[in-house]
Structures are given as structure tokens and as C-alpha cells.
Length: 408
Image (cartoon, rainbow, N blue to C red; front, side):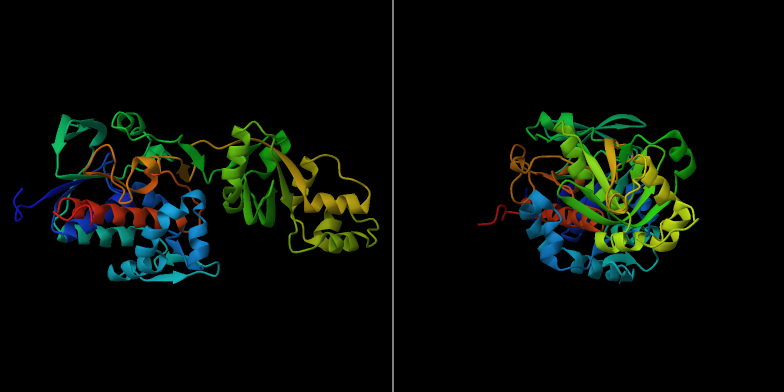
């Protein structure tokens, strides 16, 4: 290939990781085409925007990196190159102002994804990037990527490929994990794809499920084994969802998979010590009903009271009742599936890739985003790592088609 020949890049997947890879490839002077299974790009990003689009987090960088658990050592260099601060600057470059919420979470001022996505797509268009929609990736045959399209099967050749096909959560939005088998043929082994940041199942009584589904448990703390989280949970027909639940769902999932029994303990008043609750329960109750009594002295809501009773008859003894309020036991029957999980755990094993995210078994093929073997809690960590790995894969792919890859 002569030095002045324009290289072409195929980015497969139009989520945040794929779009970021496409942006840096186009800025490097490559002809970039993005292939997407759905009829429009970034469907899952738009879904996330319904909740305000939590882009990243403003906490201390070391603490931020720690949220990625076992994958933090691999992800940290990419996050150092394009982490929370760089992501905020990138948003500003698109004309999208962001702000830091009281919890440290970072959101676009518009509190939705569509303005950011529109600005991003305009930038990609200005760079000459092309989109091929309704192109479903089916694998590789020699040097060509295979797609199923409305017009029939298609083979695509390119100087470099970046795969950003997402995980397997919310498959109706485009990512269903169907890439696992065809990539295994290429030597890209994946660990099991599992639901992450998902709800948990509890065998509610019929009364509780019917009367309280859809109601929030506010200002609570949850404990499962050595893990704990504070926040809110939402009662569903089949169990619990919400931020505090999602923070523990990975540990619960793994414990259940190991055959362990999991009991989730709900602290209904984490701001009160056991001693303080015991002291308040010692006040005379008179003829007041227990529900009204607990509402007045502890501020327990009707759904909190009902949850107390779900765990069995309430003890008459003050100390035992106080202990129940601080740790309502709920036996967990399972975790939600990939069809409603916010994200995916597992993916292409790091050992199958070099430090630049290139497949060791197939030079010129790079992988980014949620396809990789990592998981993180909600709070901006998921999107930040998708942006960061997409950028890293795009830069490495652009470098690979130049004579200086790999670096000396």
C-alpha cells in the first residue's frame, strides 16, 4: 500500500464505543463506514437518556478506576487518556454543556441524550463518515466481514476493522451477544455473558405484590454478605430494582451461581443506629396502631411497614423489633435476565487481545466497549469505559494501518 493511499476502516456497531472509534479514525484521515444492525444509531444511548444520561462521575480518579474491579488494571491507561474530565471537555466541544449533580454524577444540561447524539452525528458527517444501517454482523470469511442486509448477504473488506457490538443486555435495542460464536472461530474466546446492574427476584406474598408494586423504598441500605449499598429500591411484581439493588446485583448473581443461598437484608432507617431505634421504640404507644406508631416515631412509610411484615410476624420484644427494622431479611430467588439488565458482565477475554485492543489471532481487528470482559456499577462508569475503549481502539486501529505499528 503506497503511503498516500487512503485507508478505509469498517466500524461494526453504532453505540458510544463504535461512534467514538469512528470519530478518531476519521480524524486520522481514514475513510470510515459504520455498520449497524438497527435502523438508527445509538439506540441504547437514547434509552439511557430517558433517565437523564449519566455520562460519568466526578469522584477522585483512583476511586473512579476502582469501580471496574478486576478489569481496572487493563482499563486504567485508557481512562487516563480519556476519562471523566476528557469526556466532559469532549461534550463541551460538541456544544453540550454538562453539570455535576449532588451525588457527583455528571449529566448533560439538557438531561437527555438526543441533543448530544445529534451534535455527534453532525460531527461524524462533517468528517465524511458513512453509515450502513440494518446491516447485521454474521462473522468473518477470510479477510471479509459478513453481513445480512435487507438486500441479502454482503461481504465487506477493509484495511482495518473495529468491533463495537455491545454486550447482550436489552437485546431489542441492538446488542444480543450473537457475536460470541463467530468470533470464537477466530480465536477470540469470551467468558460467559451475564446480567449486570439488574433487579433481583423475591417471592412476595400476593397481597404485597399487588398492593405495593411500583412503589419506592426511599433512604434505605441493603446488605448482601460483605457488600452493602445505600439509596433507593423500587418494588416490582417479582422483586426489587433500583440503584441500591444494582450495586449488589453482581455479587448476588455470582453467589447464586455458586449455589449459595442469598439473603438480602434491608435497613429501613440507615440514618438511625440500632440503639436510637430501640430508644424510640421504648416510648409509650398507648392505643395507637403499630403502623401509625412506627410512622410517627421512625417515619416508616406504608410500603416499609408492609415489607417488615413480609419477613414474618413482627416480634413483640422491643430489641427484636428494632433489629428487624435494621435488617429485614429477604431471601433472593434469582436475578433478572439479560433482557432487562442495564449492562452485561463477561465478554471477550483480555488475553485474546494485545494492549492496544487488537486481536492476537487476527491482526487488524480491534475490539471496544461492552464486548470486552468487564463490568461496572451505574453512576457514569459504564458509558465512560465505552467511550474510553472506543477511543483507544480507534487510535490503535489508525496507527496499525500506518508503518509505525506496533510502536518500538
